[in-house]
Length: 339
Image (tube, rainbow, N blue to C red; front, side, top):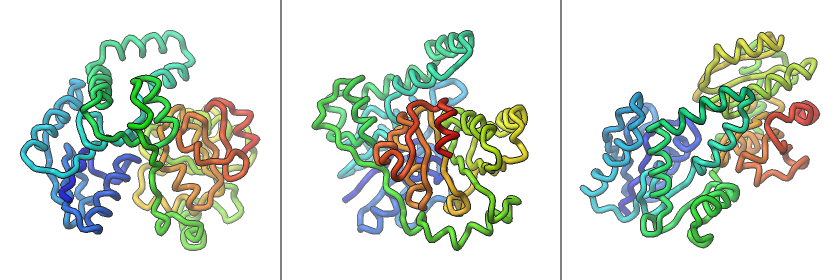
């Protein structure tokens, strides 16, 4: 079949992006003609056998990049006769629409409720109301769920399916739940013997250190602040922090909490499997995550996971059996107990 996969970015950084890259390669192996329509290509992520269509996605500083990309992608699709169109973005069209980002309104509600300063919370609410970025996100998400704009909706967790039904009144039978897959050749418990010592030596950690791992893009939403606060209440644990975020801000927070000497800020890495291998526990108290790939990767790597009910991946965890589920991300007392 001639298949189009559409997303604003084609890269291995980010959960949805990594999933799309993996799916495109898998479909090629299965003998399909795969076309990727995107606004940004990471050259190192490209593969032979895939046709790439780079379309405009400018205007981020104006808040119109989502709109520009959606319209550009729609025009590109019309030039070709695809058998299946799968959207990974809020585009307002597609045979199969994969909801990897969850419902925007639910995310906003969770994010705003996590803000402690009432003046800052009011400011952010006001900014969202005036934001073109927010307007187009809502608009194209609503278009996705209009009858006739899709043939099937794929939710990455039961939590996301429930949210779609609640917000958009989509018929339950129109939505299937398909959790993100994990490459178990890449992520598995055997990696500990291969990579643990290498990573620990690299970051000045001993074989006997009790090592926590936090991995994610967007430190604030993923709950790094709460991990640092929990670290303050554990006497000897060390923390590896991997991913893209405001490192300077969170280094300052770690210093304020007197735990900076026990933190290792790594930044983004390609071989994330090595960092799972070097850890004893994966800590991910996300404020909101539709189905965090990192949670599933950590479990596949043999790590116990500490996460929240607001991470859709918690649906595959049996609490206190193969992981620990927090009722809220700021439940520091419980997080310390679980650590």
